[in-house]
Amino acid sequence: MGPALPLVRTLASYIGGGISGLIIGLVVMTVFRPWDTQLFSLGSSWLVSNLGQSVWLFGAVIVFYSANLIQLDRLILNNAPLTQVVQLDQLSDVWIHLFIGIGVIWTAIGMRSALATTLDTPSALNEGAGEILGRLVDGGILLALTTTIVGAVGGYLMQLTKTIALGAELTGYYQLEDRREVFAVLAHLHRIESHLAQIAAPMMNTTKYQPERFPGSEIDRNA
Image (tube, one colour):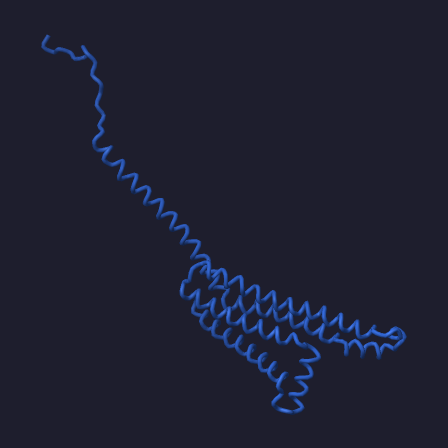
């Protein structure tokens, strides 16, 4: 593990915690609005118009994703079994894809709502461009566009965070596991070789080459 990895991991944890806290705070502010000020009212109005109820799902995915990365980091540091690390590694990718998927789903919801609101009356096609645009905005076109951006950008940032925080550690862990399998096979072959050598050693010590003797082959030198 390089000396910069603990610092990178710490910074990634702070960044992830800050983003999660910001989203949770915005969600709470949207629902409860404990301070009746213009700033918070504008923020709440923006969230409602641009994200709608998807902010709950985005926030929940971010929280679960952050907890997933923290747990995965602990497993790598503790040299946990390969199955546990692979499971959490794949689960973190699922959270990223789910975050992007929420944006796609809410895009479709916003577009459908906007079109339904705009074309709900027979005279809708005869209205001016300004009126049609206003009906699209009221129907949820901003929700469709914003959730697309949030889902795509957020998904890429989540993947970038995982790569920076745990990319090198995951690669090193998987390489170490591969070497362990190779070393285990080599050790097993060495034990087989040693066992065969122990079996063959007594046979080599007791078996000697003795030339065959044929009758009449000896020469009587006293003759």
